[in-house]
Image (cartoon, rainbow, N blue to C red; front, side, top):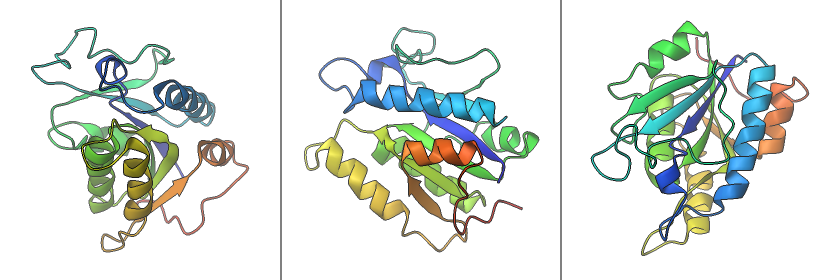
Length: 191
């Protein structure tokens, strides 16, 4: 397994105010730990930043990575304008350049950008290890953030039609896998 860590939309505007994503500080801590483990395993760390004409306008405070994150100069950055981190970006080329055959995915918002990017990764042939406790949502009028997270942890793992699969793992297990102490079961990497 040659993984890449994909950290989706963990941006300041999504972590503050009345619509802040659920459990932001704890999610940030877990993602920082994942990033440290990925770097130690020589896996690329890719920070994806969404941009729009509102609170996520490029180069504004809201667009910046969330306070408390520990990005490093050698980490990769990717700008996007849709929920799909692959759509009209160079993500697939970056992953191929680094030889990544598996994606570890975490970040925000579960029901939009995390979900869409996971599904697109499967369609393009990359298996996904979803950090089950390191993606989050602000919820919506129908579901609480916890329900959104639980729903996607269950739903994404049931998609079989693409070939590659999503597995959900707790952050601690992903860190162990990156350190070579644990092997994902049934994860045939991208060819």
